Picture 1 (tube, rainbow, N blue to C red):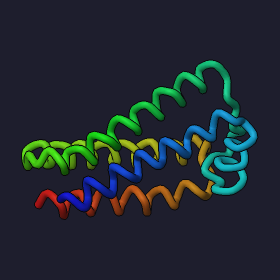
Picture 2: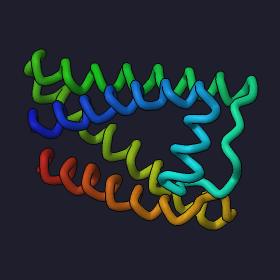
Picture 3: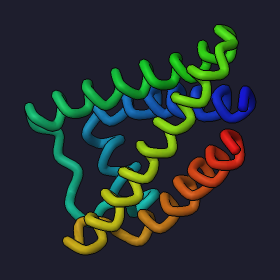
Picture 4: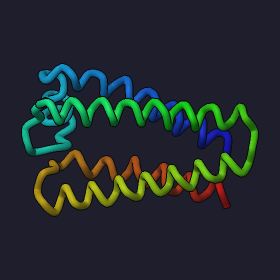
Length: 129
């Protein structure tokens, strides 16, 4: 349980640092449109995009740190709750990725997300059972 929480916590925390780069529109286009081919729609950072990006970064930092700190706190009930919450969040991400494919906004890189999300979901189930 502790390895899972630490791993997913650092994954989210480091991911939030990567997302800081998206405030540079050139980097966002390169990362999301060219290098990973996650999205076929061109990355544009308007007012609402910046607001969403700040919200996403903040949540990633919060949940990353909560997962990391839960190991230190040592309460199994909290750890189990957080793992189930992580599983639920990644299932939502799977749903968003499927929606992105259906509406043709995602590129071929989105399929790698299914592998990443699947690892976190399966590992989470194994950690709580």
